[in-house]
Image (tube, rainbow, N blue to C red; front, side, top):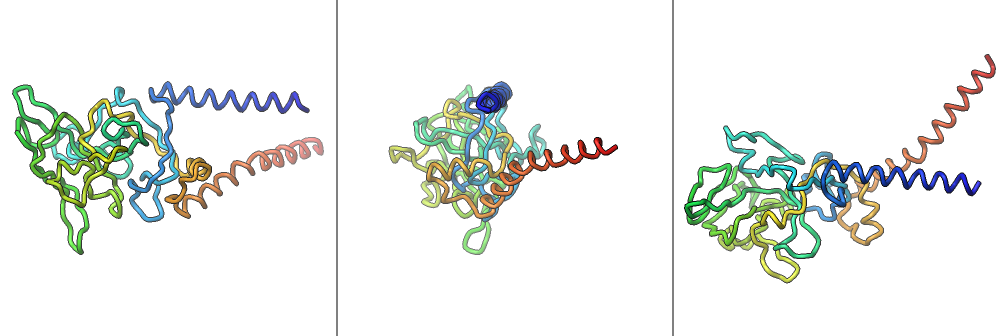
Length: 269
């Protein structure tokens, strides 16, 4: 009995190692999966498939293996990446360290990127801005505000370095609020801070630790429950997770019943 249990434990461990190794090879990142802890990327109050919700697992691609597409590139008619969507909206979702620090990474959408022009000034791929001293741009990103709508705006931003401007998708929290207050003319509705209380600056390439790929819904909620960070996980996610666990537990028993009945039928014949 004990040898059988040990054999099955080794088999299970081997399958886990094989799975993680395969994902590592495929993504170039380790760990290849991250658990989403906050609701800043939610599209609906109770969560939705296709968007990034608290408790979801997200496969992380190495940023060196992928060409990041920004929101403005994906919404610019005629652009090679026009129409590209990731997790329910235009553009890629990146995972980055705030100001290159060591606190929990942020998973937010890349809105645009300031790129240094060789002759001076700044270019913004996906827009008509080239060789400009400051960046002012209105994104095709509508937000509700005081009963009306407005578009996200970049206001006379003078970048201190190349990098991405980012935002969450959740309109009730980070959505419609640019993470980098320096790019919004000091608009107090905007802005994240790093672990030292400093305003977050444009995300340098070296601060990007991954690009969000496939979403695996609900399964990460178990980890949040044990780590005490489950407050933002929705009831829908908990119910869905319980359903998945129930199916996983019941399938082997159902298969065993089917096999036994098939063998009994064969013996009777």
